[in-house]
Amino acid sequence: MQESGAVARQVEGEAEPTRILIVDPYGHSRDGLSLALLGRLCHVETAATSWEAIKKIKERPFDIAVVDAELPSTHGLAMTGWDVARILRAFNPALAIVVVTAEKGPEAQMQADRLGIAKLVEKPISPRELRAFLQTLEPGASIRRQNAGR
Image (tube, rainbow, N blue to C red; front, side, top):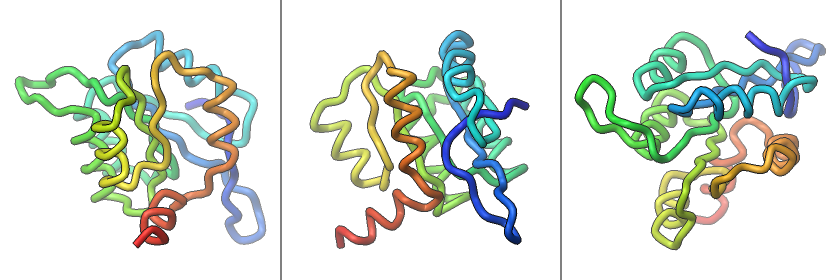
């Protein structure tokens, strides 16, 4: 469990760390993103697989999820990052989701819009840009933005 950064929630007058879940199949990417968020008022957890991410979201609430769109098959089941985003959203409708993709084309943007994704980020990720964006987020921001557009 690591302390790191974005916005903090107020709970009974005290700031509670923002909980961030990073879902990426590559250890160096997970570690790099976690390190990029160090020193901020948040708690970062990581998941290497879709199943691990689903298990974590069932066990505890998160405010923000950063999900790689290109997740490999797990236990013989092909589940993309987009599928994981849908499942995470089902468990927590207020979750702000950032999807990381190698191809940020019109189809990916349409998919992000359909799912109420807070931000679509193209690889390679700039840690500075990610930190700056996460600081602008508040829990539920993606849902409110999606509902405002209707």
